Image 1 (tube, rainbow, N blue to C red):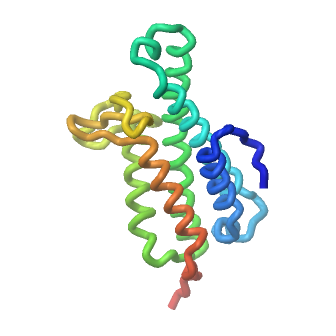
Image 2 (image 1 turned 90 degrees about the vertical axis):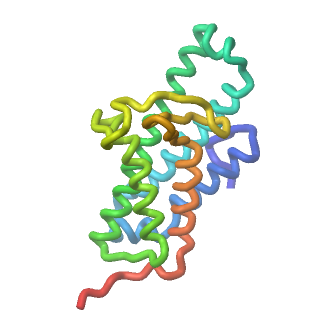
Length: 193
């Protein structure tokens, strides 16, 4: 299967193929309650596309010196755009995980062994989202997480003294979780007694 996204990088092509495969998983269609909305298909695909675009830009930024990143108008503008897209990725990823939790409850579906992972990722994403989207940090966090550094070649935000959250770590965790859900053998409806 050849994807519309052509990164000319086999690693990014493979990563996007994984996002696309997960998006087409029957479990996410069932989570929607059999409706024809394709919410998860489109949302997972778009989050995956944005993830790969961010990684592609990360790779470009990582080849630049600090001077080059900050002292040419084009690189400065691209850096601001990159940071904005990374923040929007966090907000979108939170919305996806939040929706998964709500649909699981509404459609009475269980994923034994994955509830803690879903909840943990939701909390991590919400910690950033609360501040980015609502200006409502959790107690002890900065009012605005600052773009702290590049970690593992990706965006990283300082949320309080000594605590940093990396976008690529969140992305990897989300991709692994969605993959585990798509392949989960025991996704069964809950039965009310």
